[in-house]
Structures are given as C-alpha cells and as structure tokens.
Image (cartoon, rainbow, N blue to C red; front, top):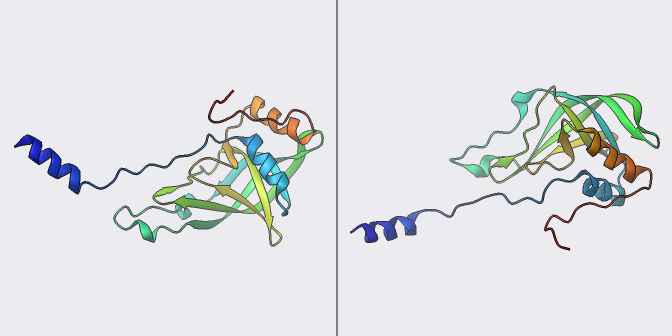
Length: 165
C-alpha cells in the first residue's frame, strides 16, 4: 500500500525547479561591458530606491511576474577612472530588477554596491538579476582592486566557474 501511495504521489508531484547560476564575477562583468557597443561606467556607492517597487512573485500565477521592472534610483559614491574609484558621482539612474521565472533580483536600498551601469537613451541603468551579476553588495577591497586592475590593463583573468585545470 505504501509503495503504491508513494508511486502515485511521485507521479502527480510537479517537477522541482531551481535557478542555476554561474558564480557572479565582477571581472566577467567588466569584460562583457568592455565588449558591448553601449557605453558603461562602473561605480561604487550607496544605492537608494523605493523598495516597494521591487517585483513580487505571485507563486500561484508566476506568469504575472514581469521579466523586468524599472525603478527610479540614485547612487552616490565614486566612479572608476584610470586611477581607481576616485571621481565623486551623484547619479539618478534606472534600477532594472530582472526576474527569471519566480526568482527576481532583490537589491537593498541604502546598501553600498559595486555597480556596472549601462547607458541607455542617455540614462544609466543598473541591473539586479537573481544571480547577482552587475551589482555586488558591500564590495570588499580585494573585489574592487580586481576591477581596477582590469581597467588599468593589468591581470584581468577570472576563475573558471567549473574549476577546470
């Protein structure tokens, strides 16, 4: 009886879904931005926005979750130049929260981030995806130095996410 019940339950249960991401890597983001035809800038600073505007997944009807939600935001901090993060900035930007199925980027207003900002139609856009690409909360000095090294033409390699030799 238990075997029959277990088999019946396994047949009617829906598939388990999970989001699979490569580890977020600012060097990979730097290299991708460098290859893009659109201009990008890189800043570190405090990101502020209305957190009520972040998308929320309706788990009963996931199709209603928009793939992108644009939110007015502001970032105050420093922009990357040839010398490092040394140019003060105070920018009104668009924060684009990206959803992949039921998983959405969920940045925190008031937190410090390393942000890769793409220029679109004269405005800079920060991307917040569920995998953590292009927006790094509380960046440490080592992470910032990796990006500075890339920008200065030094070592710009990034670790193989699959740990291949």
